[in-house]
Length: 120
Ligand SMILES: [Zn+2]
Image (cartoon, rainbow, N blue to C red; front, top):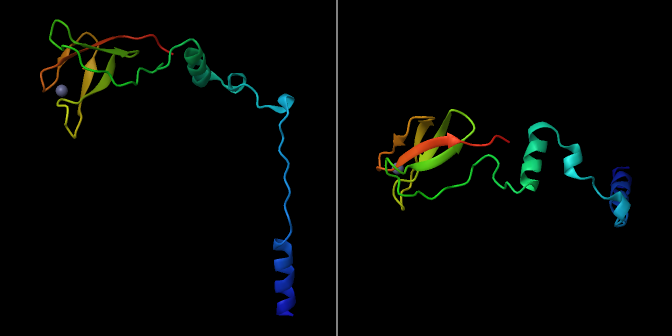
């Protein structure tokens, strides 16, 4: 009896599976913009308008960084966390809070200043 059960299980696994490719233009996925709402929709619209980094998350190269010409950090809020790679071969990032209207000097000597950014 047990061998009979095994045979029926193996018989089920030997069945062939056939699939067909669906390639019809009228059955394509809808545009993601039609489904997106809220912040996701605003993000897609910003990218379509040419703003590739709407949240200003890219890594910036430091400029002179003096008190008169500080590194400019865009933010939509009154504060932002900034990470400075103080030395080129440093293995750690020096994180600090930066507040609007209060330029701050990193431990390495570079100055940073928060400026307004356009919200998404
Ligand atoms: Zn630094």
